[in-house]
Length: 357
Figure 1 (cartoon, one colour):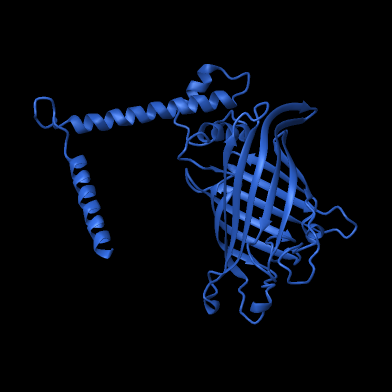
Figure 2: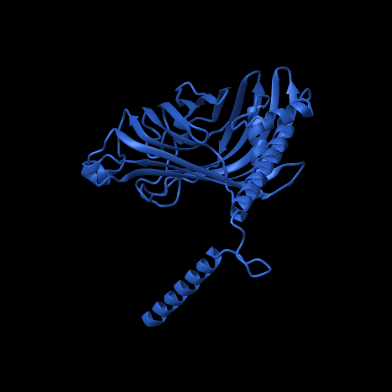
């Protein structure tokens, strides 16, 4: 079996090497001669011109989808011919994102970002706790690495009245990367699969310009077993609007009930029956765009006399044409599932891979 495998690998290597060598050879002309000395340069020029043409066409399509009614075709051409690399001056930030998503989501080689994607090499939290009886005697650093990956993909276009069904997945990682005494463990990982229906809308009510409506199901879990398992399921409704220069997202939810546990370590039943008390019943986000800077405030609240919830500020700023920096300040409950009932304050600094606006 090992000899057969080795022979197969050698055969694959020979074929692959021969193929690469053949591809590397200059193509012969019809008369058998090698291509002219300037042919490669001409091909490079043609490829560059074709790429520039494609970029201009993509820019014009994007500009036409996000332009106001008072913008002329000549202005669109001027913006696209000026070599703009970032947001166009006429663009509505949210509509620009939706238009860009629309142009990429049918590409089978592209997965569209859902929430922010970021890497925070420095993240300091004020109330370090394992909340794990097996680790109570282990060291826990207040400084760690936090990062998030969030992706979505359409599964059914034009489901109903120009709405689209999406599946999405988000993971948030809390990594004790600087805790050499405990072999730098991943302290907590939170997983959030979702399925939701999203519909762009154009409703005007006074100063409120409604832009997007979504209804979905999400499951939040840390993927652990008892006694550190944390999870809950929600149905949510999300409304995104623009009020002047501000973008506002309101997302109330309904927690799907679970049965009580028969005994404390029962793998079935509700792992955290009081999680709504700390995580709240809704989430409000307000964002303001300043060129390529985005300032966002997030608030969660339980709307009870025993008031609990959380607040978070995100500020993103350009580093170069591709990446942004991100400053994040969180205070309250529910920064991670394992610590959902612990009040904490966290300051994080890092690199933003994809922004919300």
